[in-house]
Image (cartoon, helix red, strand yellow):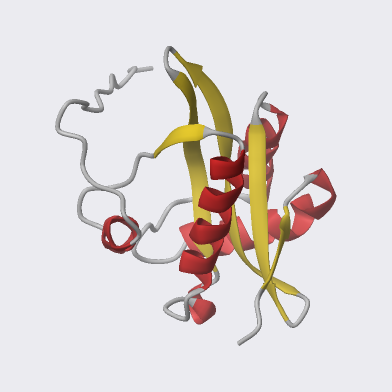
Length: 149
């Protein structure tokens, strides 16, 4: 399987929105993204300073996406991986790993010292990230506040 990895830009937004909408509205996520909210989500990431994003294509069709933003930290640069997805019919074929390796190599060339992300505790994504070298950071924790209407 020959996968083409390219920069993901606003020019590819329509394809990215379709992929994102498909992936995250299916199990295990079962989200309720509309095309409009998915477009806003991806556009906001692209418009954030330090944006880096890459797409994976197979036979000219977008099958994977990884995107996030560089952030300054007191000892150097970090990368907040905001979104990553692979078309459900193309999962478990190495596309996600290929995208992750490409991202890490590009970030290494920019002297980025760390990549971090948020994902659900009990999900296939967590196992994927661990397989690709990520680990649970015991020093950090995510907290949230539900704002009632």
